[in-house]
Image (tube, rainbow, N blue to C red; front, side):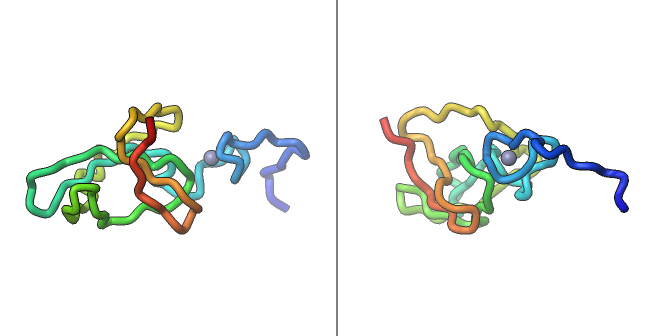
Length: 103
Ligand SMILES: [Zn+2]
């Protein structure tokens, strides 16, 4: 038997996918990340608005291909409030979709 006992009504994390006492199953959950275009002319912050995977390579709205850079600078920000036009990952845990925050 394990020493760890689970309370019958352990509160859930706000993401609804696991108990609040356990970390998010996906390390990139709710993180602010930097993506830089391959030609070096455009760097944008992208917020992962969900507990799910994020792609290494994306396409900016400008059409430039960009890659996730400065991984050590990723910042956990579950309460981040995107501004209109900010880039955000939405979608299911395994199906990230890059969208511009409306407004
Ligand atoms: Zn969670």
